[in-house]
Image (cartoon, rainbow, N blue to C red; front, side, top):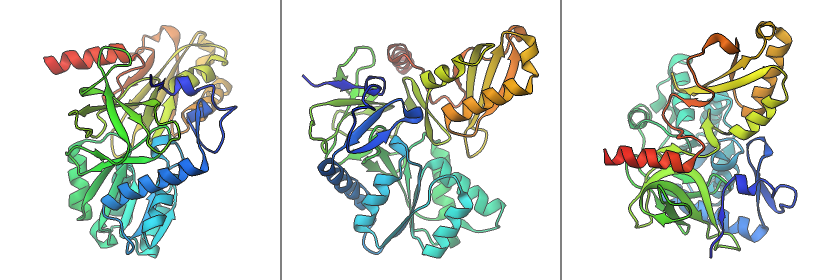
Length: 361
């Protein structure tokens, strides 16, 4: 019988993990690839990127971070196997990305959907550039959930094809590709969906994406990704529609809510908290609202600084912090409030039952 893994189940693997390690947000899990596994993973990722149109003439800029599904490490290594030149610049400096595209004469940009949209906004608003003048021949988008109208905007503004790629959120290996609005086709990796209402039962339709990575030595093991997709039973599946479980994606990074809870628990005076996530423009906005048990702490600059530092450490992203009195009756309930509608919550059974009921309705 295959073993099922989640991020929570891998939390005790960090000390004994070996090889090249993919470490989760706040270091709450780690998975390793041995040299032969890494080689096979890079070969698989090269096949996916090759199917997206990369070849020996391509000049590529990779603007991704170094974390799980959104990691730029393996895409950059994979692109270097088939492209004429590859630069990995990270996700945080759009001006650096823009300059690298121009100096490298890049024709391919590999980034997140929001990263591409933010680059588009910067090119237009801050530099007065026509994005089509950058000379990009393709965009390869990895990670994040984005509205279809935004994808059409990218195609229109950059005047080039857009390829969607799904990467394994644990290992950071690109596994499937397709055009916007169409099903993604995995290469060499078996992809399934977990049943909406039954534990550890595979099926089709709407459910959590479950992978059996073919590049691993122990290929019998199954990994829950936390990504909710729709699959037709043929092995193809949709681009991610939601996330579920303890981890959600905020500003291009996976945020582990138990790690945030642990970080805040040691700060005296916090009664409860809400993490409110929205997307008012091209990027996500995260606001951490902490309800304080004593009114004297609300306006205390030392407590505000402590909470802000803890939030940045746990969320590893730009986050706004508000301290309010416990009895202020804030409009947001404790826990994660995703105004984007992306995250379904930590309980898989409850989330899937809600999805199944809405699908029937």
